[in-house]
Length: 225
Image 1 (cartoon, rainbow, N blue to C red):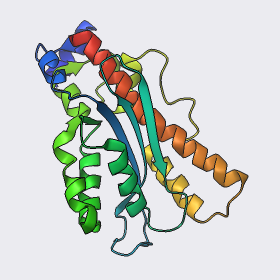
Image 2: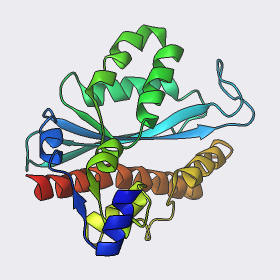
Image 3: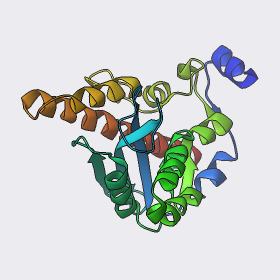
């Protein structure tokens, strides 16, 4: 709080001298991963309880080397069956066995642990992802602050402060709660143009989240390195 106060009063950002060493811990290729989940009031899938967070989507941007070309992978469960097994299989294929996995908060770690508990046949491979996680939120909380954060460390506050011209204002789906509601709506819909429109909106939103992590990480690297 003192750091936030001082930065706000001076209108200057705070940059920890340790930030460079922290960012140097990234192992290439680097994967920028974001999950979306839905908490269903009435459990729909075997082994779930009311309001369990069921992951139904992920987006992942990949960079093989610093300043290298950016690649993108994504998964969205479009059927009405339990999405966890196909999502987990796609996730393991996407992330491979090497490189840091950049996330924003502990949510992705929690989802991976819960997937491992629900899918014993994939548990070892899923749990092997955990040591590779690199929490960008924790890094920013400890090593950087900008007055434009206005006291918030949400990615939606951090992104426009660090990256010009990139925000969530133009997206039809602009937060995780809306994404959850849209996916649950899709479960009740037949295939058609409206269902496809909602699916496109979900893909765009999740893609923005993983891209936001990449852009924020790039900005921090330029400031620190």
